[in-house]
Image 1: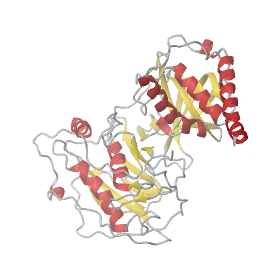
Image 2: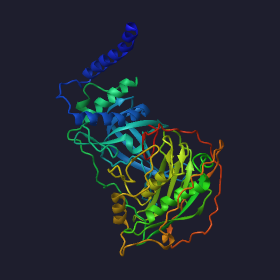
Image 3: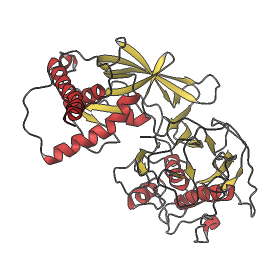
Image 4: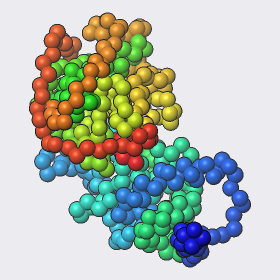
Length: 461
């Protein structure tokens, strides 16, 4: 027994000594006051956020955004942007003094057309950043989108996914400690501080933005939405096709019956589209995107004047989606995800209140289907109601359809999601809707850890 304990603890002691030696070499072992309990909790929370980012990163760098270039993708269906980054120093991996970062979305000034994608890291030219990156062909992408980007403002690391602002020194310490624990090769010079620009400030001005912030045009926009029920989880324990459609309709309805806001989302039948892209239709569909991708993404198309002309949502069918209204601890609630992504259509940004639908994280097995006061206030600011209540006749019946919790146990699920159409004159709803099932790619199931917190874009953690 004694020998066994000695063998068990020896690696731990070696690891601690290795960390101390490494931190000393990098100038990170200066004497500091004992951390308060609140600070210790902050560091613990920070470590929980950084750990999955480090594990997925091929490269971690500190740099400044120099310029951007937007254009169509090869299929001419989506707009993408490449940002040139000047590297101040590298924490993990190796790279040249400059590198390219690829993101979805951008604005084509020659065509007067732009695309915004939810949960994608956004950059401003001149911005100082700390980035967790993955290699993709000739460029890099940001790990977990927004979550993998930290703006550096006055030597603090600022992120939409972390309410507190750790210092850059704290970030470096945590990254090095986590990378070491994962057996990753650190590549940080001992004089890294000398590479820090004096008085680093994130350039958050929109001087390089060529459009007005987008919103749906008109005083009372009505947005027709098509859905492709092509999820492989339909007919599985996640629910029938009717239940999947009901979950999406409920999400449309929730945003539409806010009495102090005048905007309506209306179901407009099915679609056979299996990919998103600019096609003058607003579509919601299911696409297998892999275990490391988000659970869903909203894409918004707009003009230079800020008028939204189309919006799409894809939902990651590689996650175990549930539409019954009673998700298990390892399942993702479809209605909650659809409600959040539809919020980005409007377009609403993330909030810092954990009770809000637009808060950026959601627990596996959790349902968040009721708008909070922040969600309602932000919607009303964009689309104010001149005479309360502003509810379209299509939703005159205040009752909300509930999912039928009948579970069909089938081992071979097949089904098809449908896209969403654009804002036009008052659409009419079909009294009876036909559910079309169109099998597409067979996804590999992703099972979240029961009770885990996940980012919306829900990412396995």
